[in-house]
Length: 334
Image 1 (cartoon, rainbow, N blue to C red):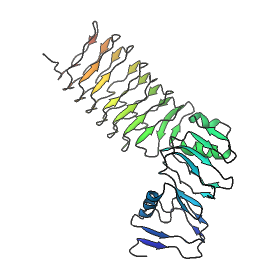
Image 2 (tube, one colour; image 1 turned 90 degrees about the horizontal axis):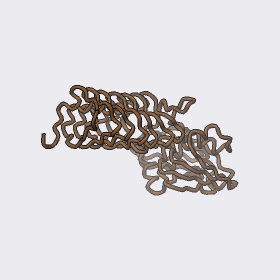
Image 3 (cartoon, rainbow, N blue to C red; image 1 turned 30 degrees about the vertical axis):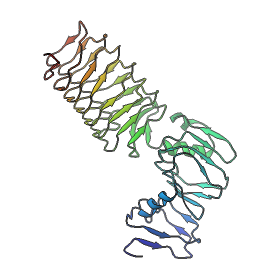
Image 4 (cartoon, helix red, strand yellow; image 1 turned 135 degrees about the horizontal axis):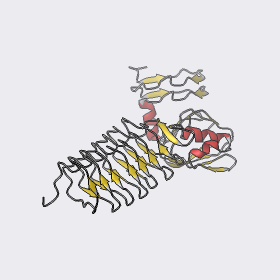
């Protein structure tokens, strides 16, 4: 050992415990003898050595044990000589879409596929192909290895029995919500510090109160094709939010829903929406263009107050505009 940067495992050692060298950032060189028969989950996670090994190959293999494959992308095949896939080996492998196993002698430890949210297909050693579809897979009768993959991949989505997402773990910055989730529950992502982009499934019909409130790095929300309701303060305080794809199915938005979304530039509100409630877009300073639907009946108090960049909008005839709805807004020519 030299300043904690080099470790040589003595000849004769057979097992390396889980997480034993985890997060020793300065560890750059590791020598592992052939006598080592088992390496526990995340034994070298967070070390300079494992990072360097990933650069050499997306699969880090030692003595026929697959320690790490999290940087793999697309379709991957587990080599036939691999006898152990260590716990957490593919964890957070967001680029992994398909996995093929060639050997029926390989042992796969718990959480090997944790948060591999884009895994869509697994081919088992006997040639059986299993396609994953979403949270309904939790109830399917699947081979053991495929069943493990389902629970590992969907581990970050904590849902109620009716498919409402109540919590999401895993600290994933570019997140695709699993197919089958019907709603995002109250405060599910509130104050999330890493979330930058979210893609919603077609099964999602509701975004709950304060669901994304205070997600200061959230920039974009995609795929809201079937969202009918966005509840109060759902995106309040998302200062980096630039783009939200609103659904043509959208029927209601709650009070202060986009309040203080200071980077939001454009909103196209769909036909069928009847009310823009109080402070819905309050202090959205960068908002330049809005499209108001012909079905609109009411614009609430301070709905667009202090949207100082807003110049292009037309209010349909007959719409009730409450006090201070556009205070601090100056259209071109006014």
